[in-house]
Length: 608
Image: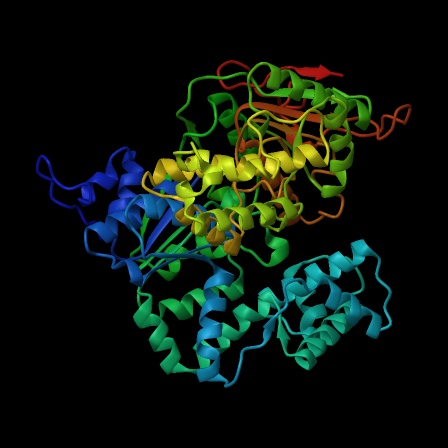
């Protein structure tokens, strides 16, 4: 039901023919791409090509005339994901389709309709709310340490995304079974003061963008009708991560229509602390009884060994999400077994990790294809030091934004000036013919050279940033052969606007939450002890299961090499009182109910 199939194109037909988009898709991906009418729910496991499936669906619909480009709104959760989607759609000939985050799409509508709905200029958007929360706490005569300030800010965000007002916050915690990081009454007071400060200063935060857009669409039927005339077809990526507020906004966009395609995996729900819930994904068929449901389980990312471990991890899960788990099937050749390593203390674990990373790089694995992932950001410092001591370059995921770096801003200005001066006609670019050569020539004055500088530190960091721009020019030229400096500068400006940063070289250090949506050839999951994963404050069965899913997300980031490690003590000479994460029971050799080895089995436990 709902499938649209174009006629087989004649020999010599134009590349814009719809069926050209379907080439290379597997049967399930093809079903997603060709089912263009009615509600569609895609249950897509990690590494199964969900972005490929939905972008080809949009492109197939555009090329076949079923989906007018300007009528399609594709929403996801990060600027990086939205940028990647836009890039893929452009390469598939589906220009004109809007691919945005929920917040970006809502902000655009809010700013456009505010004068008509409210009058005057819209309030100023508060980029970061932490400072205002700190002021609200001070006015409430509550002293907050830095970590406590972060906790209260997160609680305010959760309350707003679940549409909870300050006075209802304590009761909402009880109803949700949520454990508050501090006294709920105090948090409610800070929350109330924070809201008053925003009103006094005519500012709004990111959650207000959603709330106000929902309010306008609910209260103004004429505006809702205008939006619905513009957007008639919707695609929602990472649907397991929607909050009740985002779901309400989606319903208002959709109205009484059913042209919606959602994509998600309940097994990767790891953001419940922000109000996200997989219930909307799992209940999709209840709300849309005639929906087409397609499961993507062919894993093109990871080896059978990694997939076997991931499947085994979720096989032990409980709860509603576990009942709908997807059994992945690797499509890759066999690789090395996952390695489990036990260490006497944390410094020994970090040193051993850095040494193995260095060996991988020497054996030919690019540093940019390696990641060290941990549960909380506080764990990064010891790995930063160990990698630096081993002479291994690294980058911090979630650190300073790429386009806000001084060297990147300077490079952008230089490229813009060269483009205005005439690109290849500029004497400074003599001999530079291709776009990458031109970009390299401009950036040479900024410190770029084909060979990296020695050592680490600020000089190396600057070089890595410039190299990322040169590589981005190479990728852009490959997709746009006729493009010059002016077009590349436009691409950079668009990427900066939506914070779609290019990949940097260097081993990635990131929390498990920050690693969602990314992948590497080699992944090191470190600090896997009870109390860290699951984290100590995860006490309810639901919270424990979310911690298990967090580890699952970490495992499924690895394409080939996977190492899972833990330390028995914190410091050298300390008491070896820690135990490996309970989630590894039955998976690591020697643990209770350990699974057998063989194809896709688990390797032995090494001790460092």
